Length: 465
Image 1 (cartoon, rainbow, N blue to C red):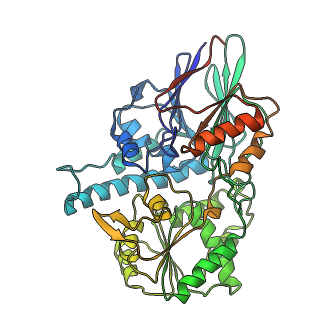
Image 2 (image 1 turned 60 degrees about the vertical axis):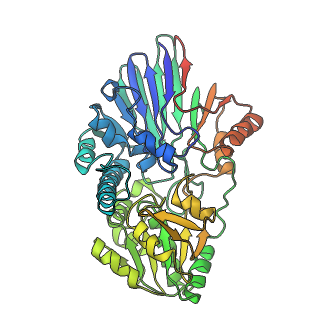
Image 3 (image 1 turned 30 degrees about the vertical axis):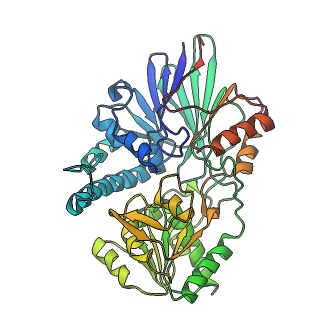
């Protein structure tokens, strides 16, 4: 039996993770992400899928983030009918995220149509809410450390990856006629000392390793997030401004609330209104105490909720309420999605707040090339929103310590658990030139055979096993 992989995404970019494996006569897609960021990448979402989706037997999902799951509604729409395997928290989060993604795309198409800034006469969404709902009937969920058989010769196990609630490292076992081979997909690996999530599980062996590379060439020390956040909050309020934080409704928002709760409790920042302007955030927060076995904060439901509450926490439930936040002039914190500023209510807040010298926009996570967040980090003077170039007059702060990704030394510490060298290691989910530098560092420090795959490249992993 021969095994080949075709790289349909996640190559030289941190988005669009899709790896297609032909295992004998079984076709498996690992992750099914949406491309984000640069226009040339986003256009890939609209291209005809490289293989007929109906020929794919199964999809395995590492975790719920849109860059790993956001193409699923399109795949199903185009004919995929097989099972989609993931953990239970990932399933619940995917339902929130994919419905939100579909709604955002419907709204963006309608908004572009009404404002006339699209080049298309009748702009359409990539997929609809109805398309997203069809995904959920195909999902099959499993726990960490549970052996899952998906064909006579293929089984896999999910291990805890940290990073996001329910995120998994996947150990894939292929039973050939002569021997069994093991492929490990790291998915996105979390921090070793995350305040809420567990450290990534130790893996000791793989014949082939696919490893994420987001911070592969960068040390990103955690430092003192509470102290840094307090500085940004206090400087903003001393400037009579409002603090705006683009953040993922799942994961990043809960961590920010945790720290804000501690800071206000200890009187290190003023007790001011904190507006959570994301329809997903309330439901996502509930999942943290629905699945206590998937994180390390062992509170009962009431106590855990209190750890994420400030005295004036407001969940903004509709767009009308959201728009009233534009009238707030000072001493408030607004947390809104999406974290990459590619869509969602955050765009309306940015449209109004970027112009204000007294306000601060805090970027609290990795921003891929081509996103509005990367342009802000790179200090571009204007940002295009709703077809208009909006001047960036507000303060921009960038705190990478809130990132959910392992940094360079954490990745190498994870590698050192391997007792044997993988025969092949693929560095994926990263950007050049850092990606290539990281690959070379693995070769030098670990003496491993490392390959930096190209988009659409096809590579034979095993021959005649």
